[in-house]
Length: 399
Image (tube, rainbow, N blue to C red; front, top):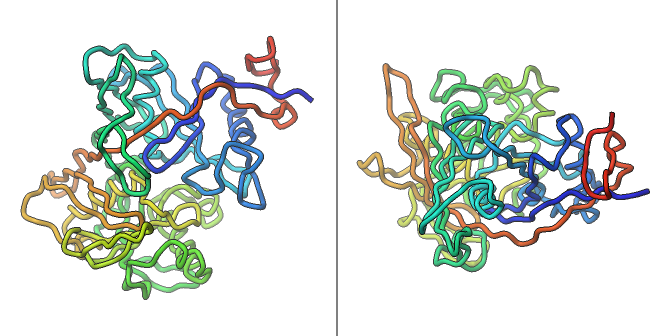
């Protein structure tokens, strides 16, 4: 049977990679998108490698982004993020990917979706998953997004041109509230685990933050050690389900289990000496906080940017679990240095209290990005029976 080819770009954004598609090249019927994305990425794969598609077998390499003209007056483009599960036939649209967000402005410029001039571009991105606005600022090189530069980011070899991302009013991206339960700290009663303290915060992406000590951990465990502990991963999965229900994301345990992307679950600890995956020493005196994050059941080697932003926001909320272990100076605008397995991530977060309620004003950080391939991604026509091929390349919904 024939294959369907769809114009596509393969890009790295921060520490993630994704297939990037134009909205115009996809069927208007969004119900058909899931199967297209699964086929393109090579999911589901019981072997966990996604060898029959563009995915890489882990959550940070199993992604699709869709970009098109903006539907809002305060943005230049619409950007929809899809997290493709590796071993399950499931596509999750419930959250955003901060790392891939850094590639969306450059994609829009290089694809001529927006008009720019001069030495620097500002692209206003509407993330449809969270209904939030992100400003991307980056240098131009001959009218295209610059690639070469001096910025090195943890987890990515070499350097690149910086992209500054500014998440505008990131609070309530998933649930509509920065503190979905109204509490700075909740005590979750988790079946099979017992009672555990958690700070449930929703900024850029909803996240359940735990104290590493409450889990019997040091906080500097490496991804391989976490991945090898099925008992710990099961405990964190149970906690995540309880947090999801408490935050109003999952209606019940079954519904929460199906919604695998959000909330993320992470644990934090005070600044301490550690070692990065590359073997470099991380000195406790040079960081403000130590963090680890699990998503889609997998420990992250480099923290998701949206979760890092959420962690920085939580660090600014007095009394939260993150705030209690963080070492912060008196300047509320100072950047927060988070130690993670791949190194140190620097995040800015602005938080204030208005009429007794905490509000997140904005968060920002720098990433690099690069277009690595463009052409067509091929999917088996047999995987998407609801589509037809016109002129050998165009994709339309079948009547």
